[in-house]
Amino acid sequence: MLSWDTPIPTIHHLTNYFKPGELDPDWIPKVASEGWIILTADRGRKGKDKLPSICLAYKVTHILMGSSVMKMKQYKKANAIISIWEKIKECSHAPRGSRFIMSSINGRTILKQVILPTIVLPPPSS
Image 1 (cartoon, helix red, strand yellow):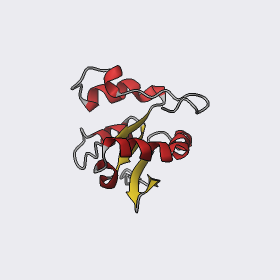
Image 2 (image 1 turned 60 degrees about the horizontal axis):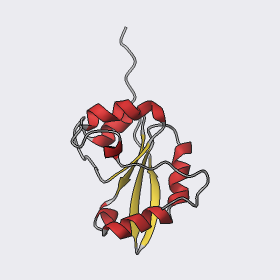
Image 3 (image 1 turned 120 degrees about the vertical axis):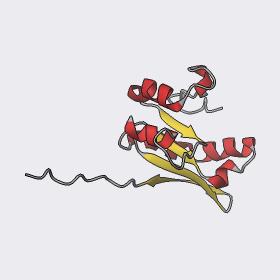
């Protein structure tokens, strides 16, 4: 579908690489060094074994589909992805492990980077 782009992007479904049902904590570390950008509907709100948390831990850039996109029919999701394709490609220039949210507002798809809080540890006591 994106064969007009240069270079032609490599886009695969997860099942092209891993068995269906393989858990996020098992497959994400395997791709962490390969520069993947994961586009997912898995919002994983809480818990250390949720895809967004694992992506952060292994510094894998990821795009989470917002609920406005998740509610779309498949062909509309595909159209939404194509409509922001240039912005998706720009995600590869963000620091590894960056998080983005893809959403739709009044029929227009947007991609926004999420600034994640930095955890600052207190200095060691002497």
